[in-house]
Image (tube, rainbow, N blue to C red; front, side):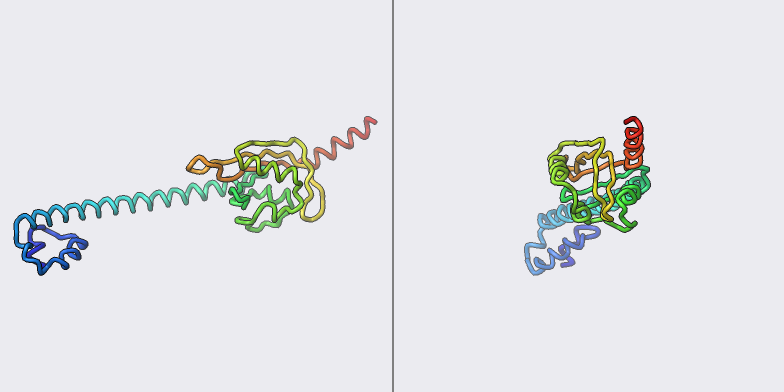
Length: 195
């Protein structure tokens, strides 16, 4: 095998492995074969450089994505309004503290939990709205009454929009909401005084 690799300065590890199979071949003495070995070795070395470059680029990209994901999570968690980001199976990716507070959900990690499992009392009309938004529509409602898990009623204003993944397909939903229960109560009291 040494004769086969004499024509290159530093034979690539894959080339050495391949040449072990040919070590007993008499054709290895020819200069044409040595030229071939040199070209193949250079190709292996170039491919190795490109592989290391790509691995480095992927590592940097993964680190950047991790950083961006952390920033997104912090932004959503600390938003002053209710925000939830769901995947296309309506599983939670992120939820703001306000979202959890407004729905009287203890501060627990709801990541991966299905929206309809957490809120089984969601009306059929709203379930259909979720499905339409997963098809690309956007929807909003100025006043909507929801039943919370503790049995209390709450009035919310909400907007639901699809978000797109890297292939420009709907990746899920972003839902924005505001608890307007107190505003609704005050409005109803004022209307009671007018009557």
